[in-house]
Image 1: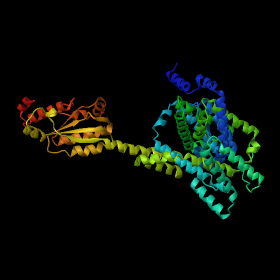
Image 2: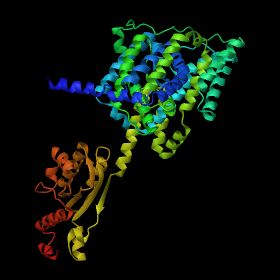
Image 3: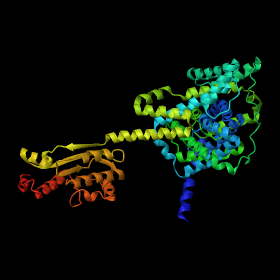
Image 4: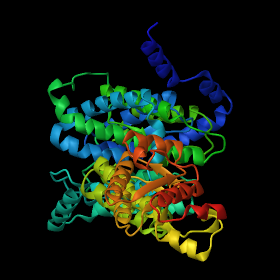
Length: 568
């Protein structure tokens, strides 16, 4: 069989479910069923709210929670993960709806699903560990701000203005409200948000989101408050699959958006799975399988009119806290929401949008971990800068650009920190280097030989500083470079070192080296620098050997007497 096909088959088999995942579902079914029902109660208003915020309607949120939640639970790499529509994804989808309409969102979801499956097969899930914590914290803070701003129109009870940026939409909504204020919607949303935030602090076991939404709906109905903006009719069942949204002419225009959605789904899902692992003992997710499960979910859910999905950190945390131990809990959550779609759609359709806005405002508030932000800001100035820049970029640009900005700045600051660790120091002559000599002989040798010890990495960020320092050497005949403490060297570092040696050679100064490690030897040899380190093209194992070679050169030039060797 073709080796490439064998590797492909192994890659596919590695991301598919195994029997142990399903056997685990039979160990504590009662506890998993209870956890799933609890998560469904928490997820119901969130699914409705995020569906509305995305621009495709509450029914899209419910469809996503049911279908994507089921598929990701079955095929994902975590036993505890709960997936569905999320606020972070909504932030990305709003501009797509504004530019391309609902069909654009569905096509983006389909393309993102395919990209996620590709990432899983390429085994890229492991690289999530390299995202710095300040980027994640800043990203989360920025998302929370955007989610809050997106709820301003519904919270104020005004028509959503045109626009893509959350700041612009929120400002225009405030101006519209100021022209003709109606405090009913604002009171509902503020009351729901306050009840959820306070309830989560004092009575965390009670699902205050559903309680507050139900209470606000009853208040509006009983007192006939003027709040005409409701969710609207929901389908009594899941829609039939359809490919009507496919439009090949839109693929090129939407590809960048699909990459953004796939990147966000990967980032949020793997982060959520990591959080779930940290909340338990003995659980460990498979990052590539998680990407595969999210990919299949996003590939299928657009066919039923759902929005792109990802794992939800808040719902996953509730799942873990309520005792879930297997995928049965997440499947139960999706099944309960499916029953609601079929049986309780008329009741759900009466929920005021202002109440859902309150739920999402509370979600945004609870996303901000003040303790984590304070700790990150106090850690180092670099961490604080990365956090602030990532959060600001999330607010004014888009999520993928924000992550890129955060990673680039964090990488640049890390390089600067590493570069500062690299040092080049002149080494004083000691008896162990020169042998037993008189003070006069030490002074004579020191007039002609200088030794430098290079510590740390020699790479592009510090190489030119080394070149400058080495090039300033004067009034000596031999330079000895002690390279045993060089931790790494790249091609730029080797080329700069070669340049410095050539400049010294042109001035009649011989350069010797000692302690070159095998990895650095290969790099130096590849750029032709190794041949320049000594008159015979050979480096020396130890510094005393290099000093001895330097003495021989000085003897040849008549600067040091050969009889000095007898004193060793």
